[in-house]
Amino acid sequence: KAIPTMAIRTFFILAFILHLAPALSAQNTDADGRRQDVIDDLGRITTALETYHCNAYHYTPKARIAALRDSLAAALPATPTSLETYRALRQLTCAFGDAHTRLSSGALRKNYNAAGGTYLPLAVTVKPNTLTVRADYRATETGLAGAEITAINGVPAATLIRDMSKYATRETAALDRGQLTDNFGYYLWLTYDFAQGDFTLDLADGRRLPIAGLTAATIATRVRKPEPRPDLELRYLDQHTAYLSVTSFERSPKGYKKQLRTVFDDIKSSRAKHLILDLRGHNGGDARNGVELARYLTGAPFRPFAYSEWKATPELKQAFKNTYV
Image (tube, rainbow, N blue to C red; front, side):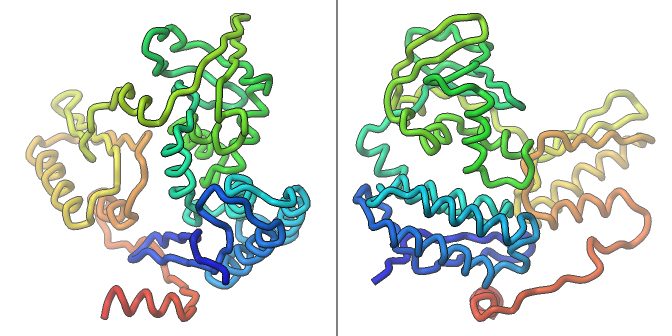
C-alpha cells in the first residue's frame, strides 16, 4: 500500500493551518524506490493541489506544470534514491509558485545528518547572478568573508542560483534568493550530488580553493546567532519625529495588539507630529497584526478586504470543525 510519509502542507493566511496528505509512496528512508511509484506520486501532488487549493494554477499555467511533470518523470532513473525522489516531488510542488504550499524534507535530511553527511561550511549571500561569502565556519581558515564565488565544483554562480531556485518556496525571484541566502548549504546539498563531499571554489580574485565539508552539528556550534530584536523598535529622531521599525508580524495577535498600544501611547504622549514607519526586512507573520497596525494610521474605519471565498472541501470543513467546534 502507498504510505502517506510526505505531506503537502498548505498554510492559509487567516485562521488555521490545513495539512494535506495525499498517499505518497515515496519513502523518507534512504532505500531505493520504483520509478513508477515516483511518477504516480507526481500525479498525486498535481491532483492534491487541484483538489484542495483554491486556485492551483493562479501563479503557473496548467500546461507548464504538465510539461514539467512529464520532464521530471522522463529524467527519473529506474530505481530512484530517496533524495532523487524528493528532488522531483519538490520541484513540482515549488513550480506551482504558491509560497504557502510546501513539501517537507525533514526526515530525509535527518537521516543524512545522522549518517554524517556534510555541507559547504560557508554562509553565502545570494544576489542576481552573484554569490558572496558572508561567514566562514571552518575552525582555522576564516579569511573568505567578503569573497565573491564565481563557481563551485565547476558550476558557474548563475547556474547554481538558477538550479537551486527550483527548490525555493517563495513567490518572487527576490524572495527565493532570500530563502537560499538563509540556508545556502542546505539548498546546495538538495540540488547537487557533489554537495555531499568536498568542494572546490573558484573566486573572483582568481583563487581556486578546495574546502572540506562539515557536518550540520559542527557548523551549528560555529554559527554566531544574531541578537534577537523586538517586533517593534521605537525611537525619536527629534522632538517632532518618531521612528518605528517593524521587524516582525509573527507574535500572537493578542500580544501584538498590546505592544502596538504601548508604542502608540508613547508616541501620543511625546506629542511627535511625524512618524517614519520602517517595514524593511520584516519576516512576515500574521496578517491580522498588519491590520491592527493599520488601525493606528487611519482616522476612518476600514476593512482589509471586501469579502473572502472559501473552497469548501470535506477536509476544510473538518479543519474548521476541529478548530472552532
